[in-house]
Image (tube, rainbow, N blue to C red; front, side, top):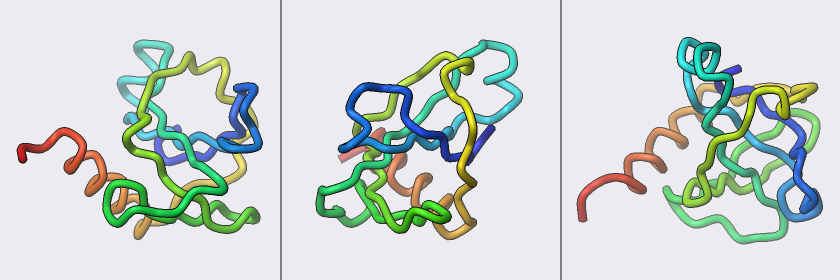
Length: 102
């Protein structure tokens, strides 16, 4: 599941069409939930915190790292693809900025 991109099960699919699972599979399988980050449409990217990432077959969307949350695994259905290595590194940098010291 880690780095898989799922259609958003929420009602705001126009603004948040996808979620990307960022939690490692070992923990997700034990807890029944996954940490996800929304992928937003129609917003400008912000360097490091909200970068553009490529959703296979759907173009680029903004990784909204400041909206990270958990969701039950059963709500994550029918992945559309997974993030490439370059975009995975963007997630790590965004999370580090989010929880790092200033």
